[in-house]
Amino acid sequence: CLIPPGKIVGGEILFNGEDLVKKTEKAMTKIRGKRISMIFQDPMTSLNPLMRIGDHIVETILTHEKELNKKEAKKRTENLVDRLGISKTRLNDYPHQFSGGMRQRVMISLALALNSDLIIADEPTTSLDVIVEAQILDLLKELRKTYELTIILITHNMGVVSELVDRIAIMYAGKIVEIADCFPLFGNPLHPYTVGLLKSIPNISLEKQKLQIMPGSPPDLINPPSGCRFHPRCVNTMKK
Image 1 (cartoon, rainbow, N blue to C red):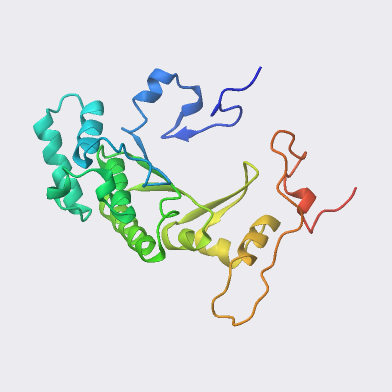
Image 2 (cartoon, rainbow, N blue to C red; image 1 turned 60 degrees about the vertical axis):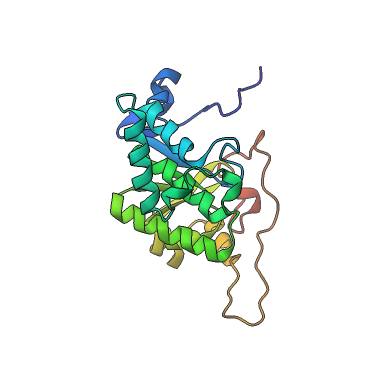
């Protein structure tokens, strides 16, 4: 039979010493949003176009903190958006009245609304221009320090990685191939895929350059290669 979409078929997800893979769906509803929050990739489509901006945040708070009343949730919402550079007078606006950068600030507000232990940011700047991207990255750095946040940043942009993170896990074909602190990894990558990834980044200080590419193509994830999944493309492969 077909595996349901999103089904975890191997490994562990450890969060504060608990394996989330083993938890029931009911138990996970108490963790999602409340203890682990998410900043989604595309702020242009992640908000409900029929809901006012303030209602998004108030509803999130009331869903998880049932002891609060609507007035208290609204007050928290006003304080939160004010810290993120959104005027509380705009809480009655709809998503289409916000720019991409402002919508992403709303998404960050939603992630912070419940004082979560962990925030997962999935390509939080991918649909933004470079100026707004820099503003959002600066905001995330400031919030991480102010709220002592733990953030898992998912991205293909190594420039964003170097701006924001302390530790990096490099993934290839669904598997982690290298883990290291940020600056040691950039200075001395060990896995051939990491080396190739870093060499593919354009260097604006060079007038003329030819980008280095990795040979071959990504593997079929339904029938992945045995052993290291990168070995069909690896320059260091040795036949035994």
